Length: 189
Image 1 (cartoon, one colour):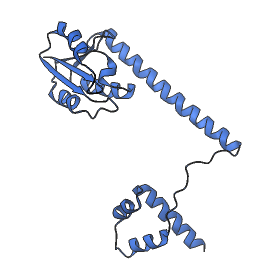
Image 2 (image 1 turned 135 degrees about the vertical axis):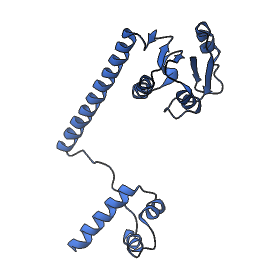
Image 3 (image 1 turned 90 degrees about the vertical axis):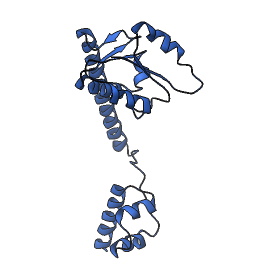
Image 4 (image 1 turned 60 degrees about the vertical axis):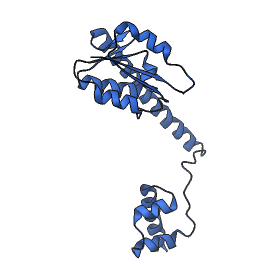
C-alpha cells in the first residue's frame, strides 16, 4: 500500500504544497497533521507507524517533515526497516528499497554518530580546562530548607520516597543523593 505522511508545524501553515508533490505517487492513505516535530510522539505519525505493514511504502515530502533530529529520523527508519516498510523521500530523492538509498541513510547515521562523539569529546575537554583554571562550578547544589525534618518524616514512614520527592519538587535520584549526603554529614558529626 502507498501511504503518505504530511506534516506542517502550525495551524497557520498550509500542507497543500506537500500534498501536490505526493499526488504523482497515487497515494492510497494519507496521514496529515499540524504539529511540531520536536519529538516522535505525534498522533498521526504513531497512527502511520502502527498502520503500515510489510511491503508498504511511506512517502514523505522531505526528511524534515518526518523528524527534526537525525537521531529521531534514524530511529524511525530503523523501525520501518525492521517491519519491511520502504521509505521514499521526495525532496532528497532517497528510496530505502534501493542500495543507494540504504547507503545514504547509513552515511547519515555515521555522520550523526561522529558528530555526537565529537560533541561529547569537546564537552569533556572544556570541563577539564575549566576545572584546571578553577572556573568549573558544576551543577548548582540543591538546598532543601529543613531537610532533616523531611528526612525524619520519611524515616517514621509518614511519607514514601516518591511522595517526598514530589513534595520537594525534585527527582528520586536527587532525593537519594540528598539523603546520602545528609547521612554522611550526620555520621561525621
